[in-house]
Length: 325
Image 1 (cartoon, rainbow, N blue to C red):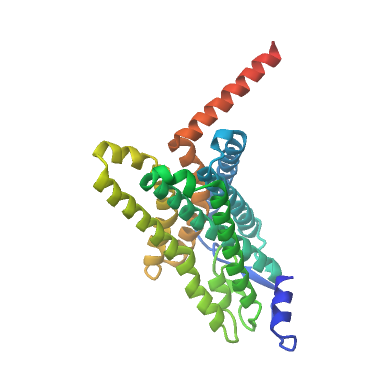
Image 2 (cartoon, one colour; image 1 turned 90 degrees about the vertical axis):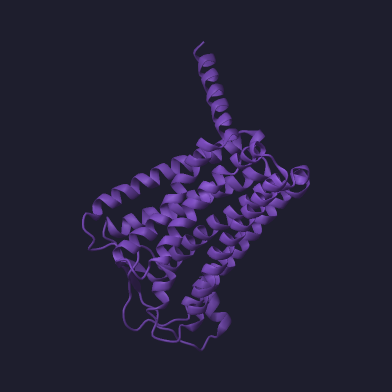
């Protein structure tokens, strides 16, 4: 539907050669790959359980319905949705052997994977802004970071991400595929697809160059600058003890940033120097690992969520005792 709307808007008299299917081949031929599929399944189960718990705790505990935890809830939702869109399909392709994926299904697969990957990055930006205002402008936090502001910020991120990914997918529908339809990746990767085209793929090339800037580099730059600003302010006006106490509130967020960005930085920096199979496995791990670890980090390192979990468990225990009595 997306492709037909896009093509009708740009011209009805243009004919493009779209294949019936693509072949996903990124993880084939790797030794002992079955153990990796088992590991992916384990990661997916932990991710589903962990993110579901975080979302349930935030929803059930009214004390956690603050602007910060609106962003945390959205991150948990994106992590759950993203791994659900990616991991079962990857296992279906490589474990079950369904390497042939229909053209439209492949573009849909790409859309959901890129949308969730992008929203993970933008969620970290929202949380960085929350921490910056909370530490640097504590007296104005209630005014600057309101529920309405956080909802609006996240809605803008969703809108920008969906539009950007739709444009990327729409431009792919303007490509003709006359030769190979084999995608050397673990999913329907945008870069792998547009390089297979036999007509002019320059617009898709431009999008492929711009996308990491807006989705990866600019968010990372904002997060780093926000923490430099926090550090400068704390060194200037706070004692060492006050500074450490303030930074403790950032540990969970900094852990998420490290887990998300560092593997991508390493992979992109060494991309030309490592074996293609290693690169594909590294990229697949960077896609599925953060959604699994994010809820674990927030539960273990965030005092409010730990207290909320304990309180909910106590209430559940009391209700069981009451029912038995």
